[in-house]
Image 1 (cartoon, rainbow over the protein chains, first blue to last red):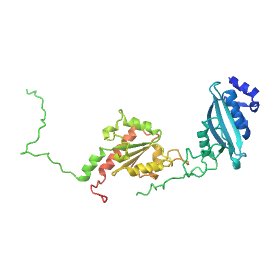
Image 2: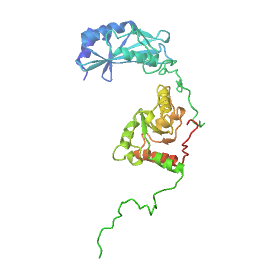
Image 3: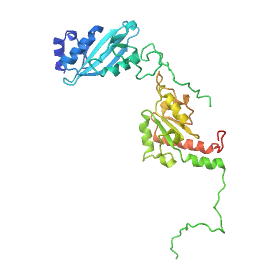
Length: 161
Length: 173
């Protein structure tokens, strides 16, 4: 059964008026500039107090190429909301959510590592899972599968030292 | 009928009968025998193979029987580097440094499919086998390996150590 808060969201939040449900999660597809205001409303007015994840999808060769995805959870309503927005490769940037949720700081760093999405307002987008000097973003579809970037010279196992 | 238990008294042999007071052997055989039963492993444990490493080192399988029971968490005190799990490119410099800090003589075991060949990982993160970082003496197949496989690898390594040359005086000494 659908959580009661979904009907509430559809009637009181204009951005959610036509939102569908996928796998028990309410899906909001928003324009890039709507994300932070809608998130603020979800947090302050609908008790979605937990940011579960920030990630992205690379839809190469479609345009706009990237879809940034946020997952929210409400510990009051026991319900989940997914927020999605599309950004293009040339301007792969969205506003940071770290002003609303502190959990966004690390999740945005990881998303920046893997997809190269910039989060405006997050001043600490240093490599988190990757390392200093890594070139490119490995979860982009055009990153080569065997694109290894060793930090030390690799031995040749066939040649004994 | 004589029912007195027959025991062999442990007494120092008399000075008049010095049999078995001295043994003769070859230096390499003797040192190899000593070294193969005193492997001090350094567990470089990075992934799920750790579960199997715990199984093989605890009571039911018990690597202590092979003298390889006492893990040392300082590379300077160990002579068997057991690389247990996936090694990433981010970790590669650490593994190299640990290997370089170990004193000679030293041996390396690649424990499990990931350490051996990268396993099912072929991507930006994983090193396709730790022999691209350090020389490996024995490879243990399996994902994860059965404890019996690990014990077999220890025994193979022991055979190898027993057959090796063990120079007492090296060019650095």
